Image (tube, rainbow, N blue to C red):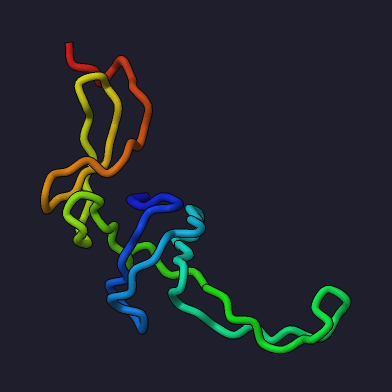
Length: 115
């Protein structure tokens, strides 16, 4: 997965195209992410002790991970990401537009360390 929880992403397809938001949840099994303020739907709730008023609750629904792009921390643009190994053997994400580092993916491994 090229996005993680608390990353800022931009939606590139669908009704909310162009919207930016923070990733709240990533579901690896279905390949979907829940983004704050994107793909909102109304959930109708019956009156109960937990919700005495009832009514309609607005909540975010997941979108396909292929429909979002990570927003680079350095250049502030939505860009594709790549993965590369550093000299110590750790794996990191990087922005394909500006080449800036966008967070670690995996801890250092001796097998990938440059000698």
